Image (cartoon, rainbow, N blue to C red; front, side, top):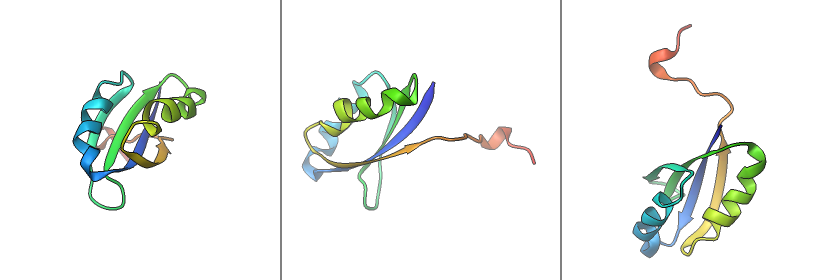
Length: 85
């Protein structure tokens, strides 16, 4: 399983609708409203990286109200309570 985070620039009038729509997508695990140049942060889980591009184009970027996306792919995850030097 691979995890990626998608930053979304959204039409301000569509943010609440996008929240509901994004939560209905099975691979979406979290959605956060953010401050700054992007409006939403969406965490998604995919079986493999090859699925990622198609999933983002078909399931996220094409949603009404989505103006732009930026995808970040997790390379390594460090959990605070499990990290030891």
